[in-house]
Amino acid sequence: MTVARTYPRWPFFAVLLAVAAIVAGSLAAFDTAPEIWQHITRYTARLSFLIFVIVFASGALAALFPSATTRWLRRNRRYTGLSFALAHFLHLFAIIALFVTIEEMPALVSIVGGGLAYVFIAAMATTSNDWSVRKLGPKLWGRLHLVGAWYVWAIFMNSYVSRLASETPPEPKWIFALTATLGFAALGLRIAAWMKKRRKPAVAAA
Image (tube, rainbow, N blue to C red):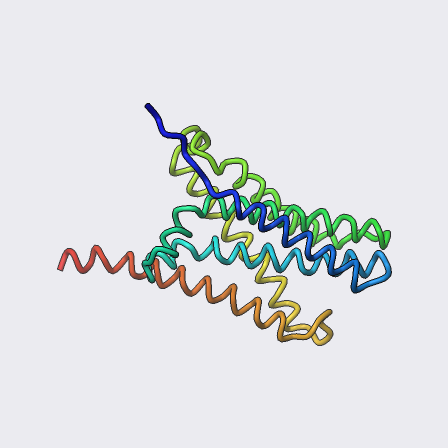
C-alpha cells in the first residue's frame, strides 16, 4: 500500500491573497490606470522577491541554523519555489498591462535579460517534480536549478543595486537598500553554508 504524498497548498493561496491585496490597495490609492499598474508592478515584484530570498536561502538556513522551521523550509522549497513562480508570473502580467496602458515598449536589454529570467523560472517550475528529476537525471536537473536560481538572483540584484546607485531613483533609496541587503544576506548565507560543508571532510580527515 502506498501513501499519497501531501504538499502544502497554503503558499499558493497566500500568494493569491497577497496579490489581491496589492491590487485592491492600488485601486484605492490611485485614480489613473498607469499609476495603478505601476504600483501593482512594484509591489508584486517585491512580493516575489521576498519569496525568492526565502527559497534561495532555505538550504543554507537549514545547514547553518538547524531547527524545525528551517528544516521545513528546506524540505518544502519545491513548493515555496513554485509559489515564487506564481507570484513572479503575476508580476509579469502586471508589467505587460502597464506597458500596454502607457503604450510603450520596455528597453531591449530588459526584454532580453528579464525574459531569460522568466525562461529559467518556467523551466524550474515545470521540472519541480519527481518525474522530471528521473528523466533529466539528478545531475542535469541540479545544474538547471542551480544556474536558474543564481541568474534570477543576479537579475534582482542588478535591478535593486542600479536603482540604489541612481541619482534619481523612482522611489526612496532606503527601499532599494533594504531589498539589496536582503539579497546579499541570502548570498552570504549560501557562501557560509558552502564553506561549512567544505570544512567537514577536512575535519573528518584530520
